[in-house]
Structure formats: structure tokens, C-alpha cells
Length: 223
Image (cartoon, rainbow, N blue to C red; front, top):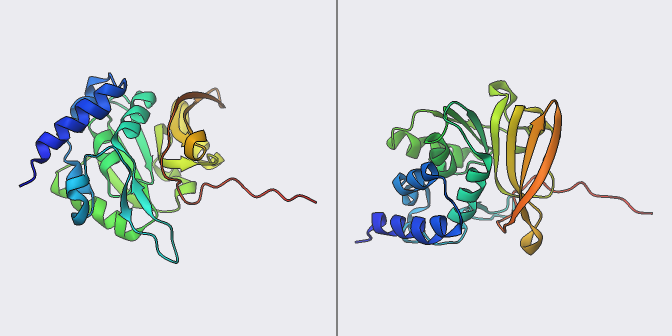
């Protein structure tokens, strides 16, 4: 029988703590959260490896979706500096793992997903784990969810070419948005901070995670 608790401890020690995640709240949340509950049944034994895991296979109509690797997620959350009284928008929440971790750190999480099957999966596991401060909603990822905003923190689960203005518009003054911007080895984790209506950005660390569909840079026409 697989000892998931031991695998979880190994993940936290070798992937999270070992990569400069020093916020003990994040360490505790990831130590407690059963990541194997958020992946397809055939991948449960791989839930704690340091790789991105497929949670929706690619089809002719849509690209694959992933649960991003634990180390990158932990570092993005630490970068956002989520506080206990804050409201978080978790964009592309997938099966709900990132939202579940964020729920341990914040007052409320709005988990946005555009796939009905992933919404259902996230709702099911969050309910089973009695996590009550997460609302899983279905809608276009690039549009955010203005009805519950503005937000203190917005997290994007996947690499993007650009961050839509709609998401910046949903940040509170003093709010932070964290994302991996770019592709492959050229991608970086970036924190955007909104102050007085203006948004500044700071590149913080190298990161490579699967691209999030719908956030591609607009095509430029040349003549």
C-alpha cells in the first residue's frame, strides 16, 4: 500500500523547503493537504513527484491541462504573501489543489475554471475534505470573476504570454498578481503589484510550467 503521508513529507522536505520556501504556513498547508486526492486515479502514486501532472488529457478540441509542480506553486504562493484576512482569485484552479492550499492561508478563495468536468471534480474533493471557504465557479479564465472582486491576490495556474487587463482591473489597491510569464526556459515568475491604479511588475525567479490555454500573445501582422 502506498504511504501517501510519507510521500507528502518527502515532497515538502525535498521540493518545497529545499527551494527557499520559508513561509511555515505554506509548508504546513502542503504537509496537510492530500495532493493524491486531486489527481486522476491512475496518477495517485505520482502525486508527489516534482513534475506537472495531467489532470485533463488533450483532445482534438482542447489542449491538456495540468496540476503544476509543487515547488513552483509553493514559490508563487509565497511570492504573493497571502494574509489571513485576504480574498484570493485562483485562475485555472483545475481540480482544486491550489485553491485548497490557498484556503489554509486566506479568508476566502474564488476558484475559477472554464471546464465543467474540472469544476465538478474540484467541488467534489473540496467537499469531501470539508474545505468551506472556497467557491468554485465556471467561466472564461481570461475574464476573471469581477462579481466577487476586487481581490487582494490573483494566482494564475500555468504559464502565460500576457496577463489580461481584466485581471489587473480586479485587483485591489495594494493587491498582487503572481504568474509564470513566458515559455519553456525563457519563462519567469513575475509579481505584479497595483498601487494607486498603476501596476508595477518584478521578475523574481526562473520557472517552467505548462502553458495556460487562452493567454497567448495577440498575433502581430507584418506587411
